[in-house]
Length: 164
Length: 195
Image (tube, rainbow over all chains, first blue to last red):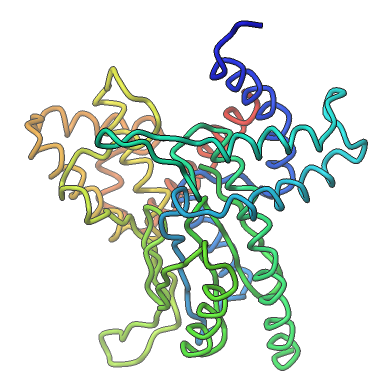
């Protein structure tokens, strides 16, 4: 095969996205939202069901410079967890998952960019804004947020018990 | 960008890529120390927070408070939501909603802005403010008042409301308009999903 490496990566990228995207969405999106009005409707439902107390506060969190700062190792660990659970046969279309992870690791180790005439290598984050990279980061965050959701569950269960 | 949310019994959690919204039932100080813990845990994921009864999330502003009524009594708590215009971009810039780049069809843009206004604004007073804002944006971008008025009439007609009737019975008609738009939005979402 004499195709340039970027074409091969693009093919791999599209194939991988095609397989992972539906599974991620099934797991992570109980309801798929795309805009602020969707969140508004959900909060209104929450209020109609009586869960907003007079002392309730809203907290918004914004992850700063996510795509430039995320840790490669942390992302690969989250991906491994996700793939192991989504593909119990340990392969996708006969390609073993360890091989897929190796390819992804290799990609992250070889991200270069040229700026002001100098060659740089990404040590964290990525300048790739493709759907696959966004999906990878979503999988990372999906893993990251589980811990905080579990803690919120615990806090609010206690709160609930005092009220009811 | 997809948002997912968890609607568990006692709290609300939602994430849209790098923006998260949570309800919090303890004190503000507790929230701040919890957030510090989050930032300490993974140094590569740092969150910036805003803890309040009035927050901006994506393109909406969500406010949970009780106002004083005219006779000085505190009203019951109300959830007020409206459209939030990011201050980073120029004020009164045309509302480029949606992913369609060129060619830009301005009539559809106006309609999308009105749809967003009804879906996001909890009551007719917020909607009226937002409608005026949309009109100002288009006026400042050299659209004629004829264009604007036509767009508004067509919008109401599309969703089965007579414009004059709306202005006479605003509060009652607005709820009905909002119901119709929520149903329309749901259908659009299902259509997008099946693609």
